[in-house]
Length: 516
Image (cartoon, helix red, strand yellow):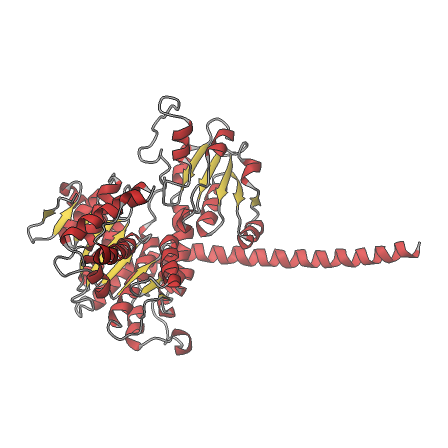
């Protein structure tokens, strides 16, 4: 079992659906570049100095035109890149073709099966005999997973001669992973061990990926340094704010196109993605109800004027069910019993990641072939997979800028011992990309007490405050959000005053009752 690949005229490997789409992909990438000014600023400023010279970077991302701009930026700064998609359905084939032709090795296409997907992951990590990546850009942790499982299997194989057994798990996808590792052991029994020892570090910005990294750190099995990009100041106030909040709401036109207003929608989870979904649905004229287990998120929903109820109380009344909690690794959210109670023509959709949030396997078991009528309205979304469109280029610009800064930080500190086999939060120096939203073109020296970084890293960040016109729209959205927050604070203050007065009146009445 191996992946058959092709090579460009320059000898670069690739496996994509259709290279004839490369010209179209190039045009779309150039369009996206206009909306991603910070990445373009990195190229202009640091391209000549080649800060990533000699670095081998393996990238696993949704292979879109925006990811193509990101990959091209890494290669423009001197890196050699091998990449794969992190989702079997999310690859934009024209973007993959353009990247394969112009800048980096690509392994991925829309509509892969799971075996093809993991073979692409394996190929992206394969840099030839004795080789492996120096840095990893991961998204949900599959590159990291394959290396760690590979090292575990190699240790067992060295001691016992036993290959990993796919039958040891009921997870069909993980069976494929074990099979791939086992096949590799026969020809190179130390492949993943060498790879882990070479790695300078990995970073991930997904909740799923970070959860896995934290678990490995806790049990002492993490093999290389990791940066928790999702916890950085820049991602809290910029990329996470943009990517999850505005990115998710920008992905919602599909519901407007598919439904009418005056419906009832249940949103599962009220994190950043859930908030974005609830906002977009309310703007479409939908009455929104949230199901939530986190008391803080419940309170936030109440402050936003959103009703919170248990799923069992609304499952038979709602028209639309939106799952938003999958980034944290949750599964089995909507079960067969819930589906049975839903009204006719109810819509169940997923803006998360995986296909196991809805009990599709239970549906198959309870209703065998021939007993359920399936009408495909939109391919690849009728088996529990995600339905939204991709996030806008201007939104992804902030996320990818943060990623480049994280990579520069890891690469700059290689061999110094600064980063151990732990999960780190990106230094706060990465916060300034956020300020590009506000239309600033320059700013004074940042306080060292809050930055705590070297001048060289600070100079990298200074270049991200570029092109105010491209970010003006987000500035308006941010200002509106701040205004809404301040209004809620004022309303809360008024309510507290009312409550104080009511308590005073109550005290007086109680005294009067006592007199009687």
